[in-house]
Length: 270
Image (cartoon, rainbow, N blue to C red; front, side, top):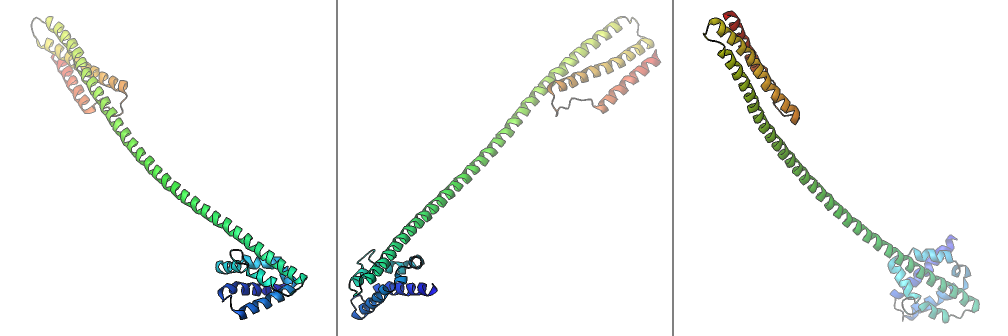
């Protein structure tokens, strides 16, 4: 089997080199004619289809093109001319006809395979280009999405800042109203109380002054508690975590100290 395969290769290589030579050279034509005559006598080579196909499929592009020229696929059929000129009998020419037919068939099959392969490669190349374009577009889309996301985040932050400012303005405004309201209630109450106390005092004595100091100390604490209660109540209404409406313990200590001092002085004077 290996010997037949080598023989087929040798025969086809001679046919491949024929278009390179001078086809009008009588010596070359005589050698080709003798080769074809001997080929017609070898039925095993002429009808060894698998080896012929395998050999043709493994040819490079240049050798394959020369082989097609010799067998008349794309030009004049030189093989048939030599075959018709052969003195072989019917069996020998039948062997040559089988050999020619299978070589031509294998050439057409290879052309078809090459065409399919070329189309597949072109389609793969186009598909690769399309995928690359899609990837580029996806990258652009992702970049645009990231840009929009950053802008949206910036707008959201600015909106939150604006909302915080508005809430702060509302809080401060209500706080101011609360301060004036608390002071108004406290002052009206304290003025009325002190007015009633002083109204009942005809002649100021140390006891009366002490009594006034005791009442003043108590009302000082009450006024402070009322004002801070209003502030803390506003904090609960707005539920603002940044609100600073809470007891200032240092100031509260000062108020309590002053109130206690007034009460103690008042008690001593009484």
